[in-house]
Amino acid sequence: MYVWGMDALKQTRNHRGLSQRSLARCAGVSFRALQMIEAGQTDPRLSSLVKIASALGTPDQAVPTELARLISEHPDSAINISRKISLESEASWKLWLFEFVDTFRRCPSEALVASPPIRETSDRIRAMLTSTVEVLCQEASMQAPWWCGGIDALISPWFVTGVENLKATALVESPPHFRKRNIFVLGNFLMRV
Image (cartoon, one colour):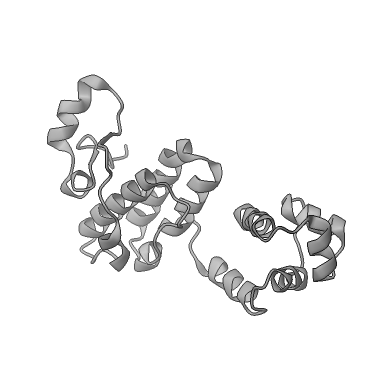
Protein backbone atom coordinates (compact mmCIF):
# COMPACT_ATOMS: atom_id res chain seq x y z
CA MET A 1 0.00 0.00 0.00
CA TYR A 2 1.24 3.51 -0.64
CA VAL A 3 2.67 5.19 2.44
CA TRP A 4 0.90 8.47 1.56
CA GLY A 5 -2.40 6.58 1.83
CA MET A 6 -1.49 5.75 5.42
CA ASP A 7 -0.71 9.41 6.06
CA ALA A 8 -4.19 10.26 4.78
CA LEU A 9 -5.65 7.67 7.15
CA LYS A 10 -3.88 9.22 10.13
CA GLN A 11 -4.85 12.76 9.07
CA THR A 12 -8.49 11.77 8.64
CA ARG A 13 -8.52 10.05 12.03
CA ASN A 14 -6.99 13.12 13.68
CA HIS A 15 -9.36 15.47 11.83
CA ARG A 16 -12.31 13.48 13.18
CA GLY A 17 -10.85 13.72 16.70
CA LEU A 18 -10.43 9.98 17.12
CA SER A 19 -7.65 8.23 18.97
CA GLN A 20 -6.12 5.11 17.51
CA ARG A 21 -7.78 3.04 20.24
CA SER A 22 -11.26 4.44 19.58
CA LEU A 23 -10.94 4.03 15.80
CA ALA A 24 -9.65 0.46 16.21
CA ARG A 25 -12.61 -0.35 18.49
CA CYS A 26 -15.16 1.20 16.06
CA ALA A 27 -13.60 -0.58 13.08
CA GLY A 28 -13.30 -3.95 14.80
CA VAL A 29 -9.54 -4.22 14.28
CA SER A 30 -6.84 -4.53 16.90
CA PHE A 31 -5.15 -1.42 18.25
CA ARG A 32 -1.73 -2.83 17.29
CA ALA A 33 -2.90 -3.56 13.75
CA LEU A 34 -4.09 0.05 13.35
CA GLN A 35 -0.78 1.36 14.73
CA MET A 36 1.18 -0.73 12.24
CA ILE A 37 -1.08 0.26 9.34
CA GLU A 38 -0.69 3.97 10.10
CA ALA A 39 3.08 3.58 10.44
CA GLY A 40 3.31 1.73 7.11
CA GLN A 41 4.85 -1.26 8.88
CA THR A 42 2.47 -3.86 7.51
CA ASP A 43 0.62 -4.76 4.36
CA PRO A 44 -2.95 -4.57 5.62
CA ARG A 45 -5.71 -6.80 4.38
CA LEU A 46 -8.25 -5.12 2.14
CA SER A 47 -10.98 -6.18 4.58
CA SER A 48 -9.19 -4.30 7.40
CA LEU A 49 -8.88 -1.16 5.28
CA VAL A 50 -12.57 -1.34 4.36
CA LYS A 51 -13.51 -1.67 8.06
CA ILE A 52 -11.33 1.29 9.03
CA ALA A 53 -12.60 3.44 6.16
CA SER A 54 -16.19 2.54 7.04
CA ALA A 55 -15.58 3.51 10.68
CA LEU A 56 -14.32 6.87 9.39
CA GLY A 57 -17.54 7.34 7.41
CA THR A 58 -16.20 6.40 3.98
CA PRO A 59 -18.48 4.27 1.77
CA ASP A 60 -17.51 0.58 1.76
CA GLN A 61 -16.77 0.51 -1.98
CA ALA A 62 -14.43 3.54 -1.84
CA VAL A 63 -11.34 1.58 -0.74
CA PRO A 64 -11.48 -1.14 -3.44
CA THR A 65 -12.30 1.50 -6.07
CA GLU A 66 -9.35 3.69 -5.03
CA LEU A 67 -7.04 0.68 -4.87
CA ALA A 68 -8.05 -0.39 -8.39
CA ARG A 69 -7.40 3.13 -9.65
CA LEU A 70 -3.96 3.28 -8.02
CA ILE A 71 -2.98 -0.10 -9.43
CA SER A 72 -4.06 0.88 -12.93
CA GLU A 73 -2.02 4.13 -12.95
CA HIS A 74 1.49 4.06 -14.36
CA PRO A 75 4.03 4.60 -11.55
CA ASP A 76 5.63 7.47 -13.50
CA SER A 77 2.37 9.21 -14.48
CA ALA A 78 1.99 12.91 -13.70
CA ILE A 79 -0.31 12.22 -10.76
CA ASN A 80 2.02 9.62 -9.24
CA ILE A 81 5.03 11.88 -9.72
CA SER A 82 3.19 14.61 -7.80
CA ARG A 83 2.43 12.08 -5.04
CA LYS A 84 6.09 11.08 -4.80
CA ILE A 85 7.25 14.69 -4.63
CA SER A 86 4.62 15.55 -2.01
CA LEU A 87 5.58 12.51 0.02
CA GLU A 88 9.34 12.98 -0.09
CA SER A 89 9.58 16.80 -0.15
CA GLU A 90 9.67 19.51 -2.74
CA ALA A 91 13.45 19.13 -2.91
CA SER A 92 13.00 15.76 -4.69
CA TRP A 93 11.18 17.28 -7.68
CA LYS A 94 14.06 17.05 -10.18
CA LEU A 95 14.49 13.31 -9.74
CA TRP A 96 10.80 12.54 -10.15
CA LEU A 97 10.12 15.11 -12.86
CA PHE A 98 12.87 13.70 -15.06
CA GLU A 99 11.66 10.13 -14.41
CA PHE A 100 8.33 11.31 -15.82
CA VAL A 101 10.00 13.10 -18.77
CA ASP A 102 12.04 10.00 -19.66
CA THR A 103 9.01 7.71 -19.39
CA PHE A 104 6.84 9.97 -21.53
CA ARG A 105 9.50 10.41 -24.21
CA ARG A 106 10.08 6.64 -24.41
CA CYS A 107 6.39 5.98 -24.89
CA PRO A 108 4.11 9.02 -25.18
CA SER A 109 0.74 8.11 -23.76
CA GLU A 110 -2.38 10.01 -22.76
CA ALA A 111 -2.60 7.74 -19.71
CA LEU A 112 0.60 9.29 -18.31
CA VAL A 113 -0.97 12.77 -18.29
CA ALA A 114 -4.68 11.99 -17.87
CA SER A 115 -4.92 12.92 -14.17
CA PRO A 116 -3.80 16.22 -12.63
CA PRO A 117 -1.28 16.52 -9.80
CA ILE A 118 -2.72 15.74 -6.38
CA ARG A 119 -4.18 18.61 -4.30
CA GLU A 120 -1.29 18.51 -1.83
CA THR A 121 1.19 19.44 -4.57
CA SER A 122 2.75 22.86 -3.99
CA ASP A 123 1.91 25.63 -6.46
CA ARG A 124 5.50 25.68 -7.75
CA ILE A 125 5.59 21.96 -8.47
CA ARG A 126 2.08 21.95 -9.91
CA ALA A 127 3.05 24.76 -12.32
CA MET A 128 6.35 23.06 -13.20
CA LEU A 129 4.71 19.70 -13.85
CA THR A 130 1.93 21.30 -15.90
CA SER A 131 4.36 23.27 -18.07
CA THR A 132 6.41 20.11 -18.60
CA VAL A 133 3.30 18.15 -19.60
CA GLU A 134 2.37 20.84 -22.12
CA VAL A 135 5.87 20.83 -23.67
CA LEU A 136 5.93 17.02 -23.90
CA CYS A 137 2.44 16.85 -25.40
CA GLN A 138 3.43 19.44 -27.98
CA GLU A 139 6.55 17.40 -28.86
CA ALA A 140 4.39 14.29 -29.29
CA SER A 141 1.73 16.16 -31.32
CA MET A 142 -0.82 15.37 -28.62
CA GLN A 143 -3.40 17.67 -27.10
CA ALA A 144 -2.48 18.77 -23.59
CA PRO A 145 -4.89 17.34 -21.00
CA TRP A 146 -7.90 19.34 -19.84
CA TRP A 147 -6.48 20.04 -16.39
CA CYS A 148 -3.52 22.05 -17.72
CA GLY A 149 -5.83 24.96 -18.50
CA GLY A 150 -6.74 25.36 -14.84
CA ILE A 151 -3.20 25.77 -13.50
CA ASP A 152 -2.36 29.43 -12.92
CA ALA A 153 0.91 31.30 -13.12
CA LEU A 154 3.03 31.58 -10.00
CA ILE A 155 2.71 34.86 -8.13
CA SER A 156 6.49 35.28 -7.89
CA PRO A 157 8.84 34.30 -10.70
CA TRP A 158 10.74 31.07 -10.21
CA PHE A 159 14.21 30.98 -11.75
CA VAL A 160 14.85 27.26 -11.60
CA THR A 161 18.64 27.38 -11.98
CA GLY A 162 18.91 29.62 -8.93
CA VAL A 163 22.10 31.12 -10.38
CA GLU A 164 21.93 34.90 -10.51
CA ASN A 165 24.14 35.15 -13.61
CA LEU A 166 21.79 32.87 -15.58
CA LYS A 167 18.55 34.77 -14.91
CA ALA A 168 18.82 36.93 -18.04
CA THR A 169 19.51 33.84 -20.16
CA ALA A 170 16.53 32.02 -18.60
CA LEU A 171 14.28 35.02 -19.34
CA VAL A 172 15.20 34.80 -23.03
CA GLU A 173 15.40 31.00 -23.46
CA SER A 174 12.49 29.82 -21.31
CA PRO A 175 9.89 28.01 -23.47
CA PRO A 176 6.45 29.70 -23.65
CA HIS A 177 4.70 26.99 -21.61
CA PHE A 178 7.03 27.74 -18.70
CA ARG A 179 7.12 31.48 -19.18
CA LYS A 180 3.33 31.80 -19.07
CA ARG A 181 3.40 30.27 -15.58
CA ASN A 182 6.18 32.60 -14.42
CA ILE A 183 8.78 29.80 -14.46
CA PHE A 184 12.11 30.53 -16.08
CA VAL A 185 14.38 27.73 -17.24
CA LEU A 186 17.25 27.46 -19.66
CA GLY A 187 16.44 26.36 -23.21
CA ASN A 188 17.98 22.92 -22.64
CA PHE A 189 16.09 22.31 -19.40
CA LEU A 190 14.19 19.21 -20.56
CA MET A 191 17.08 17.80 -22.58
CA ARG A 192 18.91 14.72 -21.32
CA VAL A 193 22.26 13.46 -22.49
